[in-house]
Length: 139
Image (cartoon, rainbow, N blue to C red; front, side):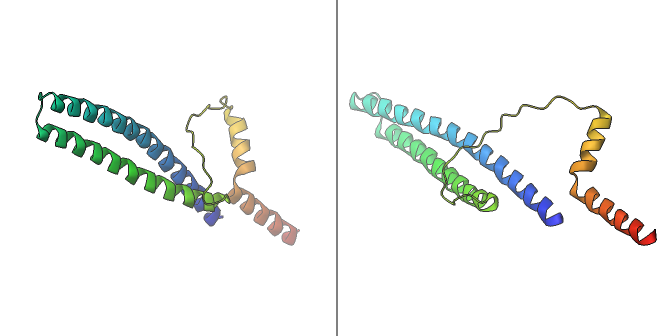
């Protein structure tokens, strides 16, 4: 049972890490677009003599840094997706986006929650089956 629980934890961790990287990817994608617009403006200003070549180089450097960071995020995200796909039995190169929007269920009463825990917890079920087997041998 411990291996199953560990696999579930690993899948959850991968899922949340992919969601975090997707968010970072969106931000970096916006930064790249802003950097491209900035570079175009600086190049236009350079053509009219308002800025120096150094300003153009700075804009290019900033844009390249953003592109590099975006590429790094994409590589890590794709590797994590491949790992997640392997664990959940999907094709390695399957394309999808994860979503972390969550609609919590209606709160349960304490008694209903306790009964759900007993019914759905594999460790408790295993212990109960051991107790039942022991009772059969005793009686």
